[in-house]
Image (tube, rainbow, N blue to C red):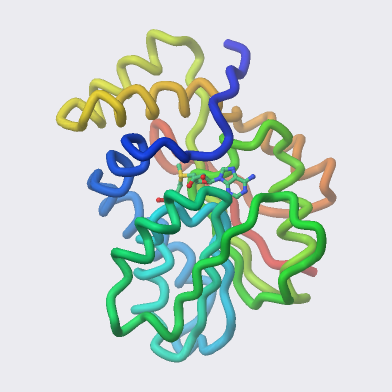
Length: 217
Ligand SMILES: C[S@@+](CC[C@H](N)C(=O)[O-])C[C@H]1O[C@@H](n2cnc3c(N)ncnc32)[C@H](O)[C@@H]1O
């Protein structure tokens, strides 16, 4: 099945509300565990969350490392507004929301850690993510990216929606379905990384997720 793009930014208020209120605790817990695994126990540097949405992953990461700082970046003001309402007081000084759309005209700064969940499939040109990572990470910095994988056909996409989002709102089911159709395959991701000259590890970690990890050399 060919890739079918979905709207890049998530800006519709109903869509943002449905996303922010959905339960992603299992996949977000898994993702943050993967990020932390490579960062070490006493990380106190600066992290960048690309396509942070309402910020749940940034909050989880910042809670794990009480001395770190996180820039949580998204191109959607509506998403960031939701995040600003949800941020716990204890994290106000360490999680900084940044309104910016990739590609960035210039690097924000040089980060020790960059992570991104569920952004890649939104991008018409996937190299925008890999170039941004190269632009913003320090040498030796850790990168962790997770995204959906495109199923073989629409029927399989529909089955995944029924399996994992049956109790969610219609908007969320609609978005999940279209995100699956917009996602990349393992081969496409391996090709993107080769083109970007990034020697990252690519691994399918569930029936719908790919995890990509690496260190900037
Ligand atoms: C599916 S959400 C993922 C949010 C969050 N990472 C999570 O896992 O909960 C994708 C987010 O990427 C943002 N996004 C899409 N294209 C972008 C771009 N070019 N620059 C910045 N943000 C973008 C969308 O607005 C949306 O908030």
